[in-house]
Length: 150
Image (cartoon, rainbow, N blue to C red):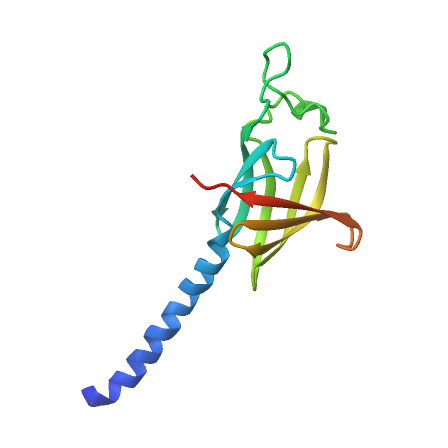
């Protein structure tokens, strides 16, 4: 094969090589620090092995009135009730589905100790809608988080 005949094939290979990079860049738009809807907590969303997780990195009131750190007191698993809320992973295993949609994850609500199935929609670069639900997404609640800028 002559050199000039290889050129078009090389270009096609390079273009297909860039497609996964573009998909990863789209999926990673979720990564960052988000202020929850009640504005009393910040959650850092990060990626591990093509799944997205979120942990509490800031609380408006991280301590109880006695000065002790707030703990996961409502967890149905009594062995976990002593863990601190700060750095608690509450968002797990979200998977990018395309078009600013993530699904197949779970979200833990420390206020009531319940874990829900979860999906997320990035409305715009600074607004994230999270829907927690049991069974079907129609039976759930949506909360809106705002991206934190540094």
